[in-house]
Image 1 (cartoon, rainbow, N blue to C red):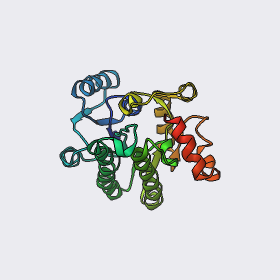
Image 2 (image 1 turned 60 degrees about the vertical axis):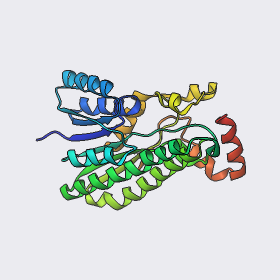
Image 3 (image 1 turned 135 degrees about the vertical axis):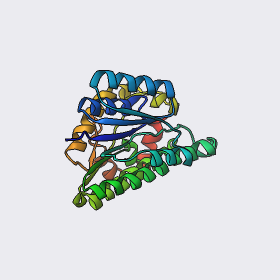
Image 4 (image 1 turned 90 degrees about the vertical axis):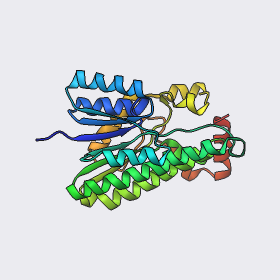
Length: 253
């Protein structure tokens, strides 16, 4: 029986790296994608040496059409797609550089949607496949000071829920991963300083990845690692929006 083949974007660090590592340990061949060439090549060598898998490296900037086109053109026979690449920046929308915010939309929404469309069709043709789209607990809130990021992750969650229903009877599962605070380099890129409570509730990236892979294998629609995070969807449904906005604004200060 041939090995599964997985494509993982944003695989040079954080959750994406840990997901790729777990898939390699499960004897999956990999295609790993990120912008950082040295980190990705070093990681690929580590996986090949340790697990004896095939691992292809694609250096691409998925905020650009060229980067997404390159993956679609050069990658076939994917059984598992993990759309992990994404970023956020903290600050008031009107005061932040617009081009950087549009790049966030290009990566978090546009690239994810194009890759999902392409590889879901390949999976449908085979009658099997698994897709994991990395959203966030930010998908459940409106975030003053994090407006575009929260909106992009709300899109990922809503899109993934709908595709889960559309594709599950065609042999393809879609899982939305909604992590809270994770020990990665995300906060540095976003310009965030975590509070004491946020640091205490943070979940290590390898634990998030392990929960994510188990949930994907079970075909779950969505998963939110971390006991502290699980009440959030209910809380947002019962808390008035005006109060939610005040609370989130204070948290993100």
